[in-house]
Image 1 (cartoon, rainbow, N blue to C red):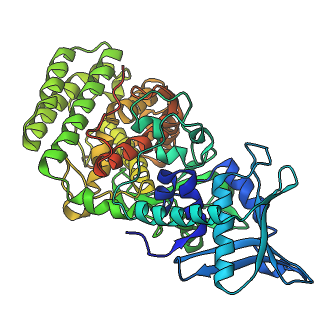
Image 2 (cartoon, one colour):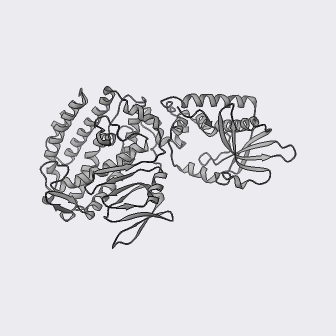
Image 3 (cartoon, rainbow, N blue to C red):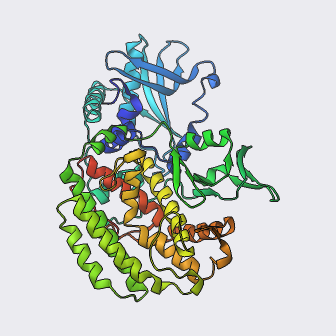
Length: 525
């Protein structure tokens, strides 16, 4: 349950959409254009020091009776009577109409009630629309106050629920809502959205530190990367949505703190691509979902595990078909058997059979003789192709880790893999269906097109590793792959692969919360 006291702004958001308020109360944050405009337009009234004479700015108010609190943008004081007029500042960058909405009217009514509970006389209220520079009065009637009080009661009741209210059904409000990218109303309604799901940070990129001995720090709002015998490089901090540190690279505490403060995780990998650990922000969404995530029954775990394994096998078959490899019929049969498996042990057996068939044929897709391999080996890699696969799988795991953390899920609470030794079991689960489509295909592309060459590898006794130069080349290929767009097979809109990872994580979150009765993997057509 959320805290017993409510903010007035959250009540107003509940009037707009109960689901949006629930998501916000559970820590979901977005960074959209309309929100940025609203924050910028509020800058002048968010500082109490800007109060002048009979006009007060950023005034905190509270009602012990209703157990609500909030902040008035502006309060005007009549010089003669001492009566107050509450003014709410709104930008309305999308509607561009000076019309007071029900959430705005409720917000003003609750602010006025707080002032009256404090013994102040309130004469009126209004909304100042900065976009049109128009002031519209709002009549504070008893009927409006009654609606506002009922809104407080309903908000408190809905926010106490363990699961969010259902999404609005084909509602125009969803098209301009700042939380549409985390709410996913059409996806949960199981229909093909007419719109494309927006990304909260469209310019956001993952910064990879790959050069041994390099150091990244923070300087005047820029990320500065330096290394011996290299020219210093700067990257705008606002364009970075995550950090992956490879091998012996260093990051300043100031940069670590700033990236975490912005809500983005940090992942550390070994030189071979193995994920060593991760750091996630302390302030994340959906904390209450982690209990149900770890308490899933064996039957419900099996529902998701079946979908993941069958999806992985079907995607492996798709890659084999694209390269005209034999053995595809065997994978089709194994995928069908996985969908009907009666235990996770049976699934592991089917997955092993499929992997043996798949990697037994995959060498036929490799063109350069120097990159030939006969079987899949993990660590240490005994050949160049397996060494490249290890790095690519580490990159994919880092991305899926970021997606699970963004949703507030616990990366260790999986349904297929074990969470032993604090292993990121859920991230390992959700990356399974994507291995052939992203990691394997990226390695094949890099090798067959000469982006990865034999000189990009070194052999230390029986272990083969990718050199720093080769790692940079492979990361560049992988980044192009996950940044490319495809048509989501279930929802029908165009989306990048990196964004699709978060959508899949949110679909799993919806399953955990009981909003969906299953999990649908991404399967290439």
